[in-house]
Image (cartoon, rainbow, N blue to C red; front, side, top):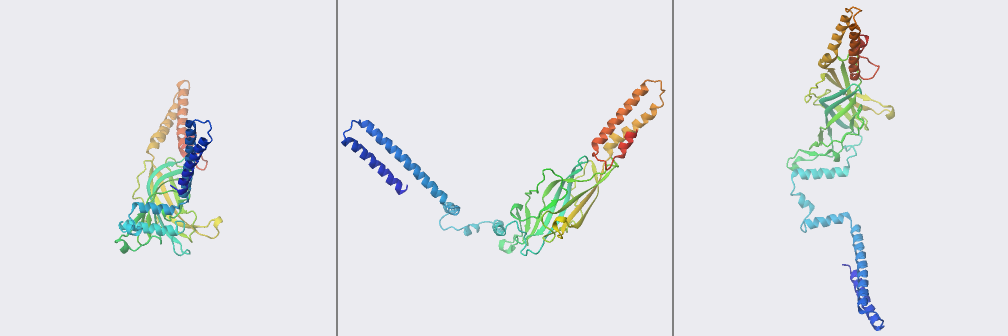
Length: 379
């Protein structure tokens, strides 16, 4: 308890004694019980005030104590006197000591700057795409929904160490949020809620600074649709990847050496509606009007798929053939028969239903009209 609090308590007690004594010497007609109650009230009032002031003083002192001092006090309360943080790290594993070393090293360099010691050099980033599954192809909205794996490789000069200093440890895993990662995005992304992907897959870091990263993603990419040969149509969709902010002088984008200019289909799951015909990839350099003569490398992957026609043959093609035969049969009926008109109306309604099914499967565009739809209308 502070000294001034004890002093104020003694002063309050002395004041109460003086009050009682003055009341007694003045011989006022005040009962002894009332004088005692007055003294107790004064003692309680001043004691409460002193306690509140002491609490405020202690709170102010606690706020003025720095975070570093509180951390040191917490450390000394958990460890014996004379224990040092350096001695505590000696009891950790080689992997823990290495991760602590790299995190401290990256904390000084920061994860916003490119991981090169010479700022005039570009970061060589190798990229590859693994197509896992074709989830959906919305012809009406002209959207292709796919599940893919993206493979990155680059050299991070801040993440290198000597394996001999850490019991021969040559690779570790680090979260991507604390290190620099390339801002490679899909240019033709059509997701309404799209923001830059936030991946939580760990980075595989080698002792020479080589970083390998394989995050997964689900893309909704725009794809122009040609419905002229529906349902025997073949569609070609493109995936255009590139850096959103870095030009080729700062981030040089290439295909991954192990896959080359191609899409990896080793993990592909066959679609129930589309057959995969071919996959191609190419690298191009583009110059945008906003950025002058700065080159922007792009990796363009092309996927060609063909529609499986078994469902549409049963639902559209065969009904059209049968209704066409019934149309010819209708002309064999004599004109005097009243059921000839009823058969004609039934055929017209059937063709109208088939046309509605075709419209629901086709995008509302005038660029390409299905030949099957034209045949149904003419019938």
